[in-house]
Image (cartoon, rainbow, N blue to C red; front, top):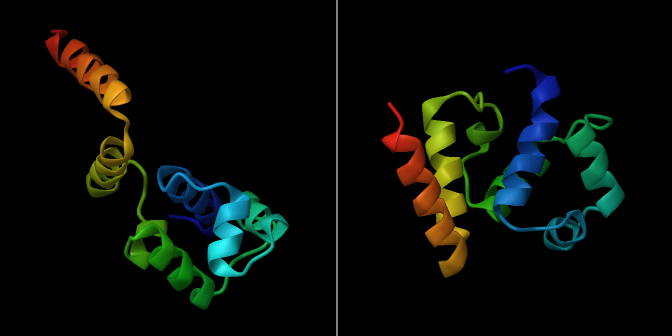
Length: 104
């Protein structure tokens, strides 16, 4: 993974966690504008910041450096989406998976 992929990885994990930039800022002590700058790549977070984000997101710090195409990263992403889904959204996810797997 290139360092330029770090920002989108932070953003992806923040969204999976269901947090806004402001909420992540509250949990980590960073200004929401700084969170935005991390996500866009304007700023590069320190190692300490990455460990803090990992703790808030409940992931291992190496998750920020895994390619999203990596099977483990995809499974973790899907698990988090499913885990946080409402019952109605879970029904939609199941229907979408059933439909996708039924195609030849």
